[in-house]
Amino acid sequence: MSTLSLVSDYMNRTLVTLSPEQEINSAVHVLLDHKISGAPVVDTAGRLVGILTEKDGLRAALEASYYREWGKPVSAYMAKDVVTMDPNLDLLTACQQFLNGPYRRFPVVEDGRLLGLISRTDILRGLAENWG
Image (cartoon, rainbow, N blue to C red; front, side, top):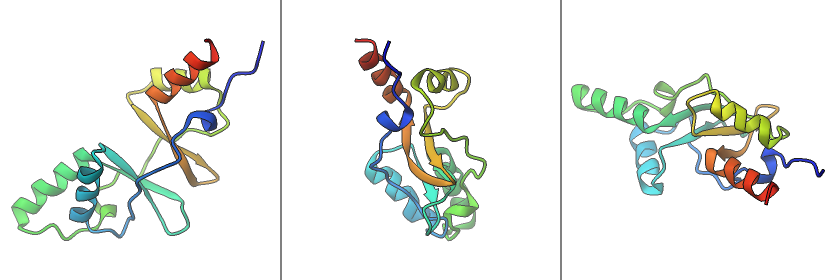
């Protein structure tokens, strides 16, 4: 029996990322322009510091409509407690992590640095390829 592939074999390495200092209106436009529901937020060293989602953008838009200004940075709206996945996790263990939680994708992080993203689709593709 061959060994099962790892998260690092199937994760997406081409990422759209945001900066914690980036103005929220600019970040919302990045999500819209790339047609994505969220993006990792990384500092200048490439360390994952949060996630900004469409829901965070909605909260910012609602607040902006009340105060009549966008103004605040991404860091004011992003989720800071991000659940991540290890790149060396095997696909079955990763599959179980998806089944145990509500997330559709996880940032893949090693030593605090963002390496990629893995989605449910990536895991399913990997399992299908591993089992023919």
